[in-house]
Image: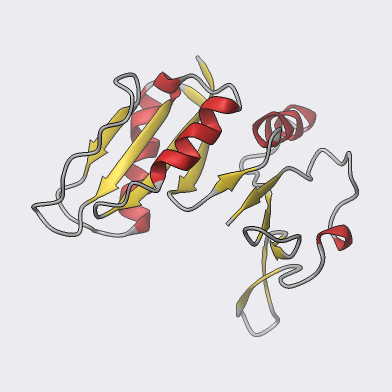
Length: 164
């Protein structure tokens, strides 16, 4: 059984997936537990060339976020992954994020989904502490625009931060 795996969704000929791939490897995730789903923008988009152990799924076209993520999740579910981390090519991880998420998962076996605190790149400004709905049904990001210090306290197992 694979404890934690990751899907990185990218599109076009962007090489920006390489930074989040490097972040995952630095976090200790084995290359074989990482899957990059490539949504080509044009049929002539060059194939991606990460390390050979990293699985690349090239989609027939750019059918969007959900279609690509579903392909990556199916791949990892076939490998019996316990947790699957869904990332896009523009995410940057702060050190310790993966271990923080896994610690939170171990604390409560009833959890089916967890995610890190998101901050805007290069700042300490919160992008999202999670999503909620207003009484009118509109979705919004909790904490959006607030200072990072206003989020969960340091040491809180739910504090793992990623940059978006």
